[in-house]
Image (cartoon, rainbow, N blue to C red; front, side, top):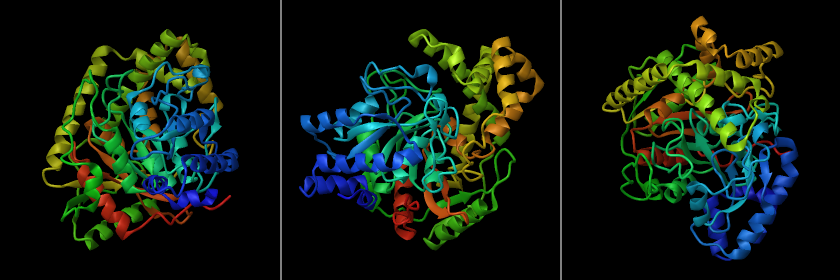
Length: 493
């Protein structure tokens, strides 16, 4: 298969060609590796090259619905026994996974051929993918821009045509943001839909969910069928779907009642082209027979952002302590921003953390009440387009301040000064819409329906009821048919 033809097929199509004997797993892997070798010097999406192991995997025999289809894991949370797992951190550059995550075991049972891992920002903490360890990962639609984060390498790899889908995870938008910036489909499942075991019960108090970024809706549904389900010892078990998710793709969604909002929940700016794309999506939905109204849940967006960032600070502090204890990492090897965030987290009291965590219940109740009237909630996936590479680097003065904060344990002073609230706004200004689904544990998807005047993709987010990925998949399939995106590709190198 010529490498350019890889982009003509989704994973379901490639698996069908292999089953029909029209393509062998070895031939497909060769084409995938040739594509990576020719493009990754430009996009820098690969963290670890596992091609030799992939060839051994093929030689050992493959079974499953995606038997023979190449796949890339995320270099964060998707531990593959014996493979590098750096979490995007220079401090973890020598780490090798001691055992495989259940997520990876299920990928292997599905017959996917794991050819490598994709880049992530340090500890998955930013919506850009630029690290001291791996450098900057670039957006195939315009390499001067970021593909987003934290699943930025996954988004870039799929958009560039390395593989038809790649592993991703989402604790505040990290599936949906790269999907939006890279012109892909990205669904964050409900809490508990995909086990986080065995190394974790729930990640970030249940806010993190694992899945994939894909080119097609059917690949996302089929992969969720492969990945979904609890494992022994999981702290939260969700009700299974009524039928396989792929079966939803042939079902009409019916007339849905859909609310939409253009307002940033934290009062920031929404780019005019993104607001216009959202209005155009509302009109498209109406043309498909849905009832669309402008409305939003009764949730204080600033409070939600504060709660999200409080969780973020506390979890980063805990992550650094755990990594130092388990792996002997030196704190000085982490980025100054990471260390400053950890210092703020250490300065928070347990009572303050618990108080912020309790607020999540209010958000979930308000969204649940909203969903008694509306089936889905539509917003832009992001408020602004992808930043240029280096645009969001901390200035040298801020990096120096970050070092001082971490050394002086001055996190408490920052909390009292109000700087922390300002930091929350600046961190979320570009991407204020995605955290709601994480703190309420509901499914949400980014659908690649539009492009801006600059040619960069614009994603539309739909938030569903808890446990109801089925409605999202039914609508996504309808939108994919009404406004196809498969033929839209980044410019060739």
